[in-house]
Image (cartoon, rainbow, N blue to C red; front, side, top):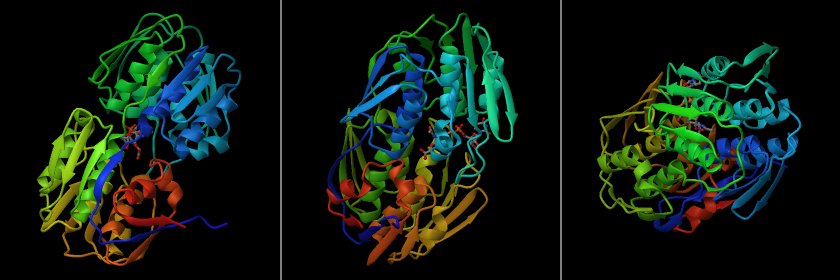
Length: 419
Ligand code: EPZ
């Protein structure tokens, strides 16, 4: 059975309000973290994403009970027995590397296959492994399989990351929470999802401070207890729907967001000439005026402009008057939306880490193909603005990070359906 496609009849202004679901990049490490609890946790505001289902499959394969009740996932990790993740499950979701730290923290042993590179280029894990080794882990790798042990208790370490890797920060936190002594992570990632993971772990009785800053301190505790926790809103999904309003000259109220996570993204939309009004738990955006090009947009680690929003903003800039330049400083191969947007008539030249976008007055429909999660979302935005009916295929990429993107967009006036 061939995969379904999105059919988008573009040229219609977006207008209305959308509720934003829980953050994929927070719920994944939090689900891994439930392995550290010999009891039951209830995680609320869990988005219905394929990556979340993959994580639940991994938890069950390790011996956990894991069940979903609406937006809540209940995990009982009391009887975790296995320490190996099958190659098939690892292939399903490369970010399952974050299970490494959690399995080591609970079972002192872990076997999993190297997460393959993904659409964004090779995804090295050297910083993860170096950090875990400083905690005392012994890591053997043969034929793409990592076999790790963490003999004895973690007694603390002073770890400096050469770059503020989100995944490495998370893996080190997960391996260090149960033990004695003090583990310091310097040049830690500052993304809000790190703070959300620390919030969950502290709710379970961990002793973590400094999360959200560049220096995270984990004081080891004997064990963790079950807890209930609500996942933060997805700031990238919020930014994506803001882009839908911007590229169609419409307006949107986004509910259930945390504007304080989104200053650099809001600033980019304002530089394009959008009016953005942040409230305590919602953001209003309107794009009544023609969009203006932006001289240079640079992706940076948080709190800089997030790389995950780069393909989204690239799509919007295809309609902005003038020449915009994007510099992608985080990933090696993250301009994969460009060739597909060019099929809609966009004028984009991407070379290495720099893309130059000349705004065009109109886009026209085409059959286009998603190549990764955020590039796929960018193509949907392109389709919303293109005259005629655009089809977007390879929806499995988009479904990894967006709960039924077509339902949300249809609810604010887009003519879009999945067939
Ligand atoms: C997380 O990936 C996110 N994924 C990514 O979101 C996001 O783009 C990225 O952080 C940056 O914000 C999840 O949270 C599941 P990194 P992660 O380790 O942890 C290099 C999405 O669309 N690096 O901060 O893999 C790496 O190659 C996804 O939701 C090393 O060299 O990101 C990259 O160039 C895409 N060695 C840079 O650092 C390492 O050991 C940032 O990677 C680790 C990373």
